[in-house]
Image 1 (cartoon, protein in one colour):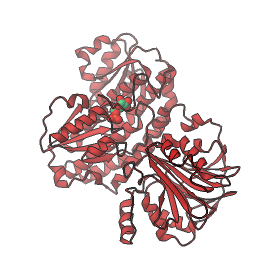
Image 2 (image 1 turned 135 degrees about the vertical axis):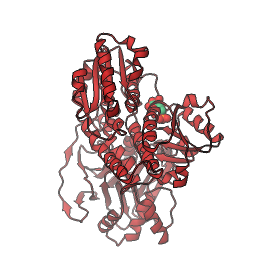
Image 3 (image 1 turned 120 degrees about the horizontal axis):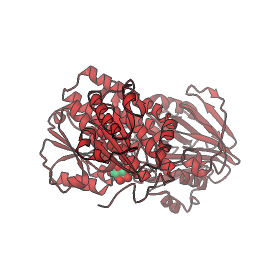
Image 4 (image 1 turned 60 degrees about the horizontal axis):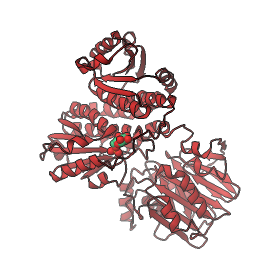
Length: 608
Ligand code: G6P
């Protein structure tokens, strides 16, 4: 996720671009850049770090004259945050310049071809292929050239483009990444999101997939990929800037929950090639995968919970032993590692002090370390031997939702890959798992759209003192995360228990009216779970059950039932966690807590 802006008009472009980028910094903030065309030359400035570094460098835009320009605030995907990797990107002749939000999935293939044709690459980004492709196909007609490269690029993109020999035109195009355009008094403006344009106009056009826009200072034309003209209606935006940053959602947490379908797709789609799974960044031969004797997953917080799920998935599917450790424990327990051990460190931020220390401890012992990380170029990403990125984009709410969901997806992909290579699943099983994986985004969407029902239920429990989450197997892992979501943002005491363990102590805490959330997605454990539900209910508990569609029997045992769509036994966490996230969220909202910034917590815990 990055933020792009562009302007063509009568005013100086650079200050407008910087102002717009300031409103988009929530979309990425590791580097920024602007390019402005003054009629003679395309001037460009880029800088690693927050936007203010770029503002200082350009004296708030004063050093870049011109009334046509594009800008970008970056959330690194390909290539770590740096001045060269920052956007915009220019062709060698400095006659075409591009900003990009999204991921070009076939960029390696395109890059190879372009290198073969003599193009030189300065950055590690996928974006640079776009500007060289434009250069390669450019025939003096920007529209034609853009449609040509659209046919060649796979993945997602929102682009702002300037062609030097069309000094009064700004081009924009999108596919699977957001883009809006607005008509201001003095010109036209493009942006990834509404907050960047609100100062200039409240009437915006939402660009649809594969639509192209040509803007001049006083006109705006829309085209299809076949260069046919389209008529579009503008939409009036009533939100204030604060609400607009959250995309109209009340909190970043809710917005990020709603971003899960896209984040999940972004995480799996570059790694699915037909009916095979390719995780190039693993950099492991089949022989190396076969020779793994043990996996050790090390992480903190929700990332640890993703690891607990992964233990069941990896052991079940790929039949490889898995240990899961809290990083703060692992780093001091002198774990036994040999050359058959692969260490997996999971971290959204890539900066968590305990996880980083665990990584260093493992490397010192000679182990190979794979990082599953969201922030490109973060410490864990840099120091791990290999990195598999989750493509969740920046997460602002302290309580993680979309990054956790993407960690699960990365781990499923790993399990499927290992299982296939180690021969523990058949070709047809793999195909079925891939089908199930592809269905998750729509299923998550469906569950999110059921939010009113969960909100109503949550409102009845605002005064709860204790809540217990119970489950077995993967359902226990789901319970751990459901319980953490609730307690961290609502300040209600909650605990997750392996349901079979209840009778060894915790059941004494159940009294009349205690809320118990029971997760029953594992068919082989369903009957056992039903007994546990009955056990707590007969002691007075009020039971909320989360289970698979079709498990109607639970209606008799529980007080309130939420059904999740059908998937295979390994992927249920991705679905069952959605109502639990919503439950924690609505309790927090109902209690008037600071949802996005809960007390005493930090998004990135860089101290021990
Ligand atoms: C903090 C965050 C959690 C996160 C944990 C681990 O406690 O609030 O949401 O799960 O750190 O962070 P990491 O960045 O390593 O995933």
